[in-house]
Length: 219
Image 1 (cartoon, rainbow, N blue to C red):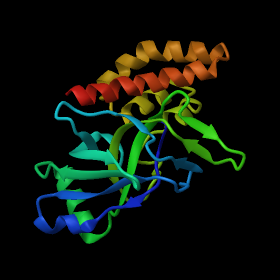
Image 2 (image 1 turned 60 degrees about the vertical axis):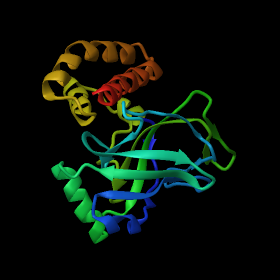
Image 3 (image 1 turned 135 degrees about the vertical axis):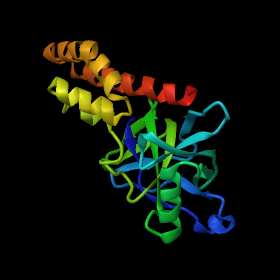
């Protein structure tokens, strides 16, 4: 995914029914986040949804730890959601307890920038006008590097097969799947980097994680 967005506090009033439902805004339009980005009104042109028509909720952007589903819509303020935690999941129960206690009070989004969907202004701020939403996450702090993977930046840091395997594991692949991908994918990635085509190398890593995200939606 391109990056993880700024923390947005959600509305705790929705916990009154004790069913694990909550609501609020996963992204707010018109404010500059900690990474120097601003999401414009109506920027979410594509929204990845599961078979039930809802967006997946992950815990701290961990693709191996889905904890619920949400209905999302854009309004004048931002990306509003109504989420339902699946309390049969231990992670969801833990997140729910932390939400009620006030220790987990932010929301963040995982997204890709669509072609032509970003413009860097003279001030250095990047204006986002075309995004694909993959997931929303309750988080301790927004843009948590330990919780989510920025595939574009990570691609430039991968220099060994072990690092490539670790990247795939963080992206959600099992150890067996990661090793299988490394056996063929590393040669392709290294070949592109040796040829000086860093842009293509980064795209390869992005495509790898996108395939895994799609498999999650179809599961």
